Image (cartoon, rainbow, N blue to C red; front, side, top):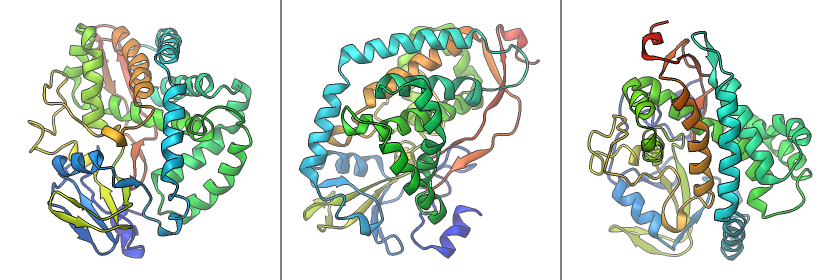
Length: 361
């Protein structure tokens, strides 16, 4: 069932078909408007979403109004952010990055040359699971046991309008919580899900983008000092997040639009990252791009509290892959998973070559 077909059955489902990495058409950038089906304001322009991210009058929310009571503790949310930021100290981030980089170098060195390999299964997922173990502090054996439950939770987060996925995630969430007993709440079960499941999605999208623009892979291979800059462009171009939702905690005005307390605002993140009013040639991947400012990890007070960890991990995992292999070519059609919130490759079958002359194998 396509998203458009699903929306005909459930009017709450967003249906912006251009807001996905495999779309043949660019996303439509529009002035803010109120969507009667979603009962929410919809923002897609970079300038409007930037204003929203800088606003203290908005708080994270879902489109499900039954969760209002769960989302009302703004002071508790801010305390949790502060505790998590403290736990993600620069020293810890450096230690995790260095350990992850060493593991990535080792695993990249064992990847086959010239024959098809699924980068998601053989490279991204094992490294992201190892990172989840380091950050959350659970044992590897426990992590492997609860991996399937984390998949259930992630699937529901990617497609929250699927009632079957929500039901399975509810049971999985209960089991996951019982496996974590210390540390800031975002670095327990939700952190495990984010690092073991969502992180591979981000990497899969980034590598798919490099398949679309092989000259950018070659540039990073030849000039590895560009990797951190390149990762920012990969996050802009290929970020898996399609939408985020915010709720107004009091009346205010957003770029001339009167927003009332309790109203929802849908932020079309993927679209804003492709806004031609902000980025030159927005539908091209350009590692040397100078116009930055993507929203894949949020911004300002609404920035992802683990943004530093995500950037460090994505770079630590991707750099050894590009450093070792001169080229990567597709070996099979990509099957996509996810839904209205984020989408990603289920698998990514490629052929890796050590030199440019192997690219046609």
